[in-house]
Amino acid sequence: MGISNTNQETRDRGTRMSKYLTFNLGDEVYGLEILRVREIIGLMDITKVPRMPNFVRGVINLRGKVIPVVDLRLKFGMDAAEDTKETCIIVVDLDDMLMGIVVDCVSEVLDIDEQDIDEAPEFGVSVSTDFILGMGKARDKVIILLDISKVLTTGEIAMLAKQNK
Image (cartoon, rainbow, N blue to C red; front, side, top):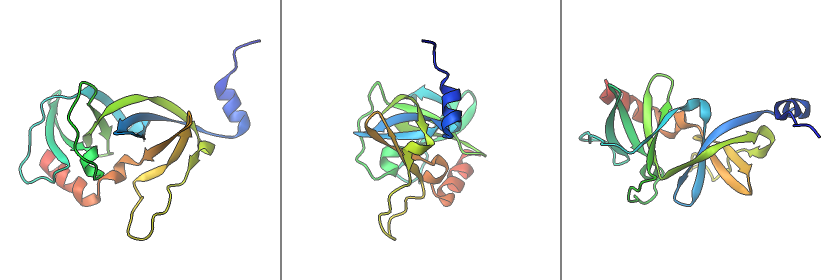
């Protein structure tokens, strides 16, 4: 019995696999498209910037580049949590700027079949789910797949970009 070629099997079935970096916020598992992730760094000193929304922790100096850092728990309306040794910053590429997002812990990189991703559920007119790419199913879990470029509104990104200059 030989080693199977996963890529060939995937092509034969007509499905597409995508890679997602998974992380936790509380008990929930989220995923980001791996192509958006620049790097994962441990928590470091974050310089607070006055008059920012509460979900903006401040900025960091990453190898000479100033990057805004957003606490994803606070952005999603969750309770703040104490930082632990597992708390880290995922540096993501938002096309024209880098941004750090603080998460409780990073889990793993998962391949998720296109067929295992459902559309974001509808919660009514007053609740926007534009920032959710879909609901991935892997290992008996539901993973909320984020479109990180839509987690922040256009105005919030413009404000952070202005502060970043």
